[in-house]
Image (cartoon, rainbow, N blue to C red; front, top):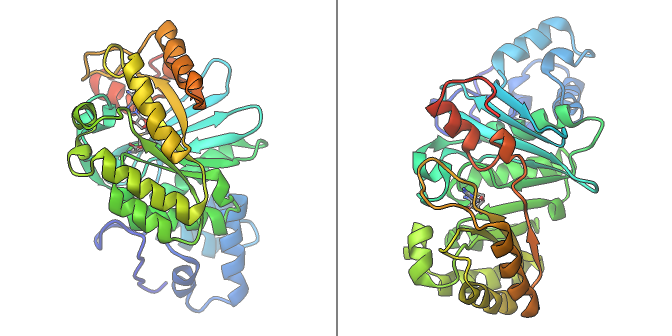
Length: 357
Ligand code: SAH
């Protein structure tokens, strides 16, 4: 097989992983093979989502050569399944020993995979387990895409309908690879743009780039505070991209894409769950016609404050509803399996127990 340049890698020295190459790059890789082989391999990889070894219409020697040349990106380090079986979470080990998480969530009307885009994160939100541990490196296209492939294999016969870029890392700080992954999921796995959601801490240049892309994906903004004083503390990047400018970027996105915007709001006891917080949030939502996802804060090792108790969550939501704003409460799915927000990795690094439940 020939040496090829693969643009989806995170650095020039990184190995080429199974889901890194584009179709054209894979074609170059198959130098000397008949053309139909490319279709067989591509289809095997993206439509069947099986391991290369199982693409049985390929000659055995070619399968072995491909498996060698294009190793899988993800080694399972831990897998936990919730008691009702509806949430599955993986902790994957990458080729360089870094760890990332993926979550599969079944709902009555859809099945969603939540993927990581970076190993670690540089955004330093104090309440977030990944933010507390700092940035390791970017994920490659193949490392992002393979998370969906692996979840899809496990999800069968239920089809993965939605993908949310809400796992570890800031997707818009790894823009090119995240976007290449979006295109791969859309073009090659048949997931529609309406079912793809990018969640950002509010990286304005990234939002503006998204507005210029042709696929109209959903945008979720992790707001958590609707005034700059509080948001500067909770989400440090707000010092660089304050709420006024972020709001304008969201307006530009909406004008370009005509998609519903959602705000994520982790309810933190006594910090951002007061009536005044709800009213400030409602005002922003009116302006942007945004929907709100409320998530009672999941406790993390490095942050002393707890999540808002149930009664406070209900009260916050009623204020929003009185103001005419739609809000969904996301009850911490998978808290029991450490499935929320980097906790599986965090718990692994603190206590070295196998399946901590
Ligand atoms: N960096 C991106 C995507 C990853 S975080 C972003 O900020 O949107 C996905 C969501 O989980 C974000 O809304 C984030 O603020 C939230 N989150 C992080 N830690 C949390 C915690 N401990 N409890 C509840 N939500 C949390």
